[in-house]
Image 1 (cartoon, rainbow, N blue to C red):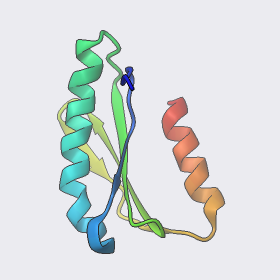
Image 2: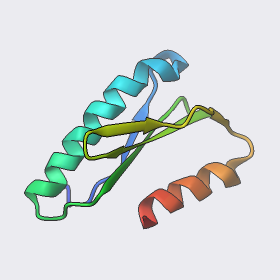
Image 3: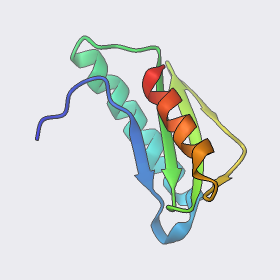
Image 4: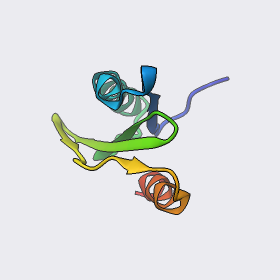
Length: 91
């Protein structure tokens, strides 16, 4: 399987602790940013999220600035999470 740019990052939180997954997600977002740039598919914003499966936390990376959504989103309902994921991929 080959990875193609641009990429989006989704990280599974270990032991259902979203806070522990934030650092890993941010590191992978930086790697995705560099991967996209190396493949001449540089995009201004990299989106990422950490999930336990039932709880979700979203973030974005623009240049060297990371922004974190302070809310945790729960499932159910699923429509809000799916809407955010679709929005991330389209933007």
